[in-house]
Image 1 (tube, rainbow, N blue to C red):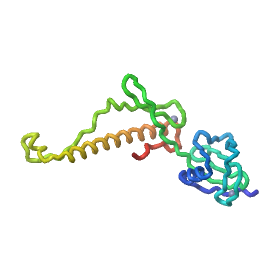
Image 2: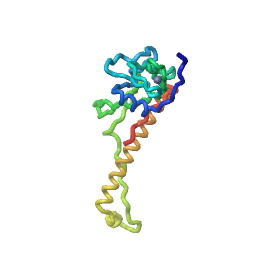
Image 3: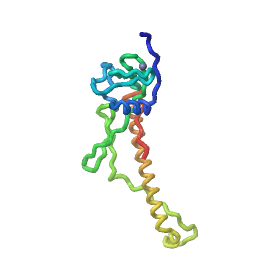
Image 4: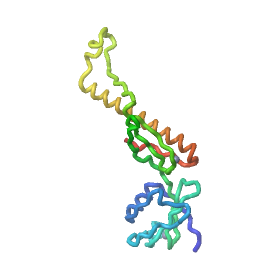
Length: 189
Ligand SMILES: [Zn+2]
Ligand SMILES: [Zn+2]
């Protein structure tokens, strides 16, 4: 059989396909050594190129760990899909203060700690009157809605700062320990 060309897929395309065939594939299952998908006798894989239904698909991680190739076993049609690392949910410790510990999705020993209870609250900013001599005068026009909005803004700022720190920590760790692999970023709120 002639060598088939490799089609580039996005991760969402792959996720949608794997959902359609009722399978589930996560990163650690994809091996660079063993190009075999564990046998699920009830699952059949319809090749999206030739529409031929077959019982097996081989998943092989690329050498740089950035992508994997899925090969439909009978027709040998192939797609290349990016491996996307995701930040796993943290584990919480009292060490002695509350610590949110984030681990590396690549199962190395690195971790990054956040201390939610030690973090200063973001300042709450209210619109004040410029020509006022006392605080009461300055805040005379401030309504309950203004205060609620200011608290929301402060919480958003705090969240943005937290996500920036997390993104930074993973970026630095990946650059050092997993060069060439795209560092995961915090999911959008
Ligand atoms: Zn095919
Ligand atoms: Zn790591």
